[in-house]
Image 1 (tube, rainbow, N blue to C red):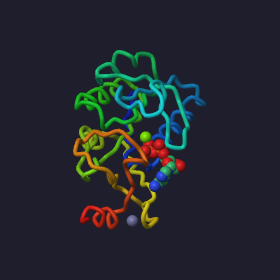
Image 2: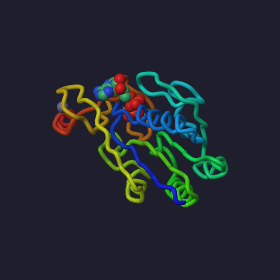
Image 3: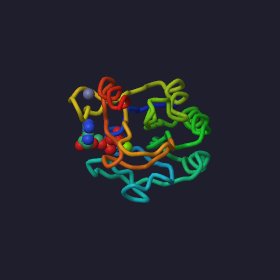
Image 4: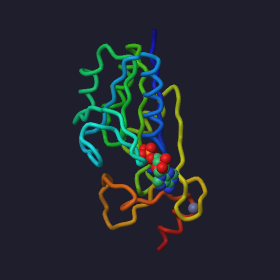
Length: 181
Ligand code: ADP
Ligand code: MG
Ligand code: ZN
């Protein structure tokens, strides 16, 4: 049988990792063989675990290149990938191949960078996925649903790890106001 691709996207603090952990936990309850990957650069809390902002955690395998996922996915029913925005563009083909092999692929990532621009491979992943879920954080300034990750400190590199010390989840209105200053 064929597999499929599920994308879970949204801003920082929107609950992507929580949702990944929820989906993985349910697959484990269903006695499926599950493996989780994340990019090697994401070592905010733990080198080998996927950890949400509220410190939920599941074991994961840090990798440097997306092609490694193919080599390490044999015999699994579900492959989950967190922080997919940090991977190279090959991740798109990798997810496709896994799904073609009958694997359910759950791939999570930031859909926009701090400038509000589409983030690396995420738009392509969203296009080829069977299912796309866009989550929202709570705007830190007004409480409305937030879809932007506003950078609160000076840095102009697209990839900048961090959390509430460096980023603020904002709605469109508050994001635009914050950028005017
Ligand atoms: P993501 O992986 O999308 O960055 P996580 O799943 O790691 O998000 O964290 C989601 C959790 O972050 C929420 O359940 C909540 O406890 C916490 N949180 C902190 N700030 C916010 C915010 N502004 N909006 C929503 N949740 C927030
Ligand atoms: Mg996360
Ligand atoms: Zn707002």
